[in-house]
Amino acid sequence: MIDTNTTARAVRSALRVLRGLVIALAVFVAIFPLFWVVLASFKTPADVMRIPPVIVFTPTLMNYAVVARERFAFYFENSVYITAGSVLLTILLGVPAAFGLSRLRIRFKKTIMLFILSVRFSPYIVFALPLFLIMSQLRLIGNRTAIVFVYIIINLPVVIWLMRAFFDDIPMELDEAAAIDGASRFRVFRSIVLPCAAPGIATVTILSYIFAWNEYLFALVLSGRDAQTLTVGLTRFLGGMETAVRWGMLSAWSVAVIAPVVLVSLLVNRQLRRGFAGEIQ
Image 1 (cartoon, rainbow, N blue to C red):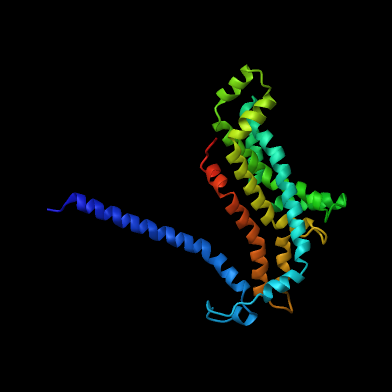
Image 2 (spheres, rainbow, N blue to C red):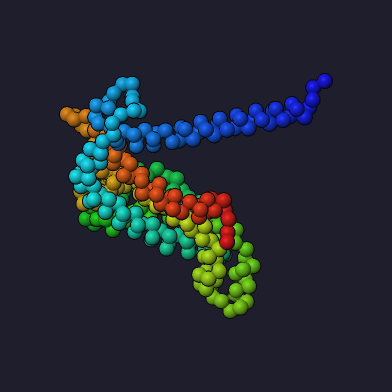
């Protein structure tokens, strides 16, 4: 007679092994392209183009040296200015808006929320041409501050939707208790609700940072020559009709673009995990 307990343990053990293999495969698929880019950034042109690809090679910093001479500081400064400005303004506008949509009685609230979400889900190319024409007429092409306000279009819907969910999870009783003690609505928002929603604010801040830092279409169309960001700078190494793609330098520039995002994500990893888990303080 077959021991049902033994069979159940064997099935659970097999499922754990299968789950581990699936997780390992998913991690490998996610990490391998990044690993390969980092590897290619230390290869010479001959090693990059070698077939089959090689993992053991003599590393070189030549690609990073060339990248440093390709006006990297100019692109980096533009990316920092545009990203920091857009994230700051998005949080200052989006968090109070989400609080109002969560706590206040507003007519057509669902319609407003759907309209905000539709802006985020619409293809960016829909906005690119009108924005280009408007900014051309206003002579704002290549103006970093103008691009900051354009980037708000990308991030504001995400901030409002996510922060509204965080505010909805904070009990209304806290607001009512503070109001009974004489606190104004702004005082309730500043002293009661915001501290409770800190993980959510950290989450939307890092997401806004990632979206703005990695944005390419608006930066390409609206930056002209004076406000190009790091993502636009990648095109310097794509080659053309007469030149080949410079894979090593392209990989080195890509590492420089990815590194700040990875670094910031690691620094705020704890708050980010709490935010995605929907925890409140």
